[in-house]
Image 1 (cartoon, helix red, strand yellow):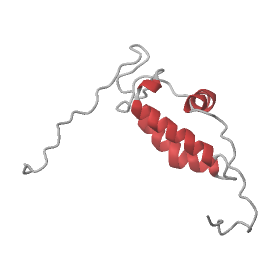
Image 2 (cartoon, one colour):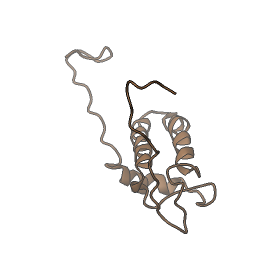
Image 3 (cartoon, one colour):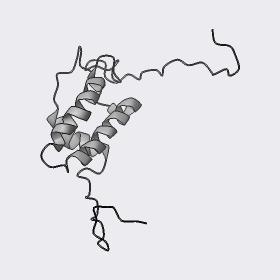
Length: 127
């Protein structure tokens, strides 16, 4: 294995820092929810059982992992994370047509249905 170009020969690379949060659930409870507050209802949707929404889990995990990386960047790391990651995913997550589209403060969690699909029929002519 070769050493990176910017590393001194024979000097071991520094260990990657430990994450601040061990799991996405910890990041959501300890960082995301206390910091990013929104009025829920109408145009803004959220589900207290967010972990039951696979798309939300994927997006929130991506936000957590990117936050762990960007927090280490001096000066503009968090600003870049807000612009490049949070702003995009938060608008999708909280949108009335997003993963929590059926959930609201009154009805609570409601499972969405997967998009309809038909089996692929290879070899058939396209319509």
